Length: 324
Ligand code: F6P
Image 1 (cartoon, rainbow, N blue to C red):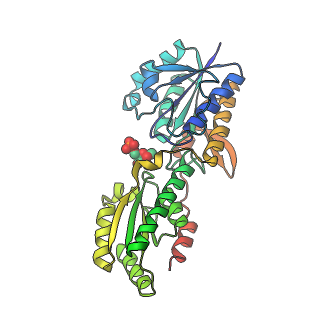
Image 2 (cartoon, rainbow, N blue to C red):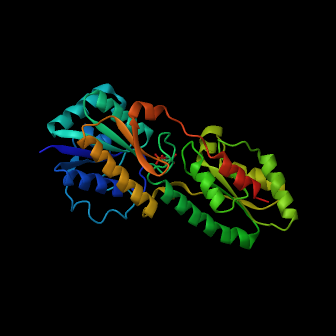
Image 3 (cartoon, rainbow, N blue to C red):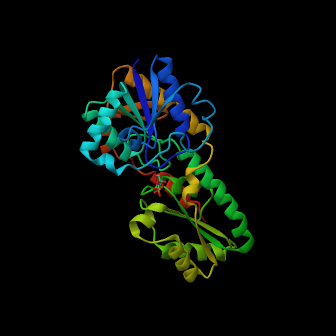
């Protein structure tokens, strides 16, 4: 019997389990056996896998993390290791492989297709930083988690008339920061995609203070720290010095990667997983699945890796304009 393989790679994201479930059950419904590789490309390279039955993926649609484990496998960037992985897949009689992860994971899938193994990528990352799709699995849950945490933070900054400077994940992209900042009514959103100076933000804070606003929330994307080599702690110190408002920094960090996936993440993960198996079953390979305007689409992996997406400057302007 032909087999279809599945793995999760890179940073984990809520909804990966829902996607593994969809891939497994879609494949079984078409008559395949399913093999799940453990810890991403590591499992492929070192032959660590488990067979997945319909029952093995019961009761996981609502859980965070990934039952297969995940890893960023640097060894898989070496061509010899890609060959070794392909050989392992041949021995397992794999018809094709579904890779759930980000851009780095798709590069591995591209190499495997070049080595002769049909592969399909599915965007699974909280960062929403993949050009070929409007939406990535895990993004919605991460944003909602950050929003809940920021709401809790608001209680205490309100009580103490403080400013909170919050760093949210997102790698080098500001999508989570932009949406969370908008959803919590942040006084300022700082991301790499938008122009801002701390002097401007401090000036705005002082003006708002003068009109009776005494607590403030500033949401900073992780990319600012990664690229500008500054930290939310430095930003908080500088804002406090410039405004006199007592300011605290908080890093939400990896908490955003955990938790039960939202409805949106579960549904998207299910649709994309199902679509990926259909592609392999139709003999189609070297594609990345995505969402465009609410529809499931797919693109050639090489084209997908070159795609970029425009930051939502309109939302940024709205959030900024109404922060008074
Ligand atoms: O890509 C997901 C992500 O959580 C990013 O937001 C973050 O920059 C990175 O992974 C953190 O990676 P690690 O878990 O390896 O520290």
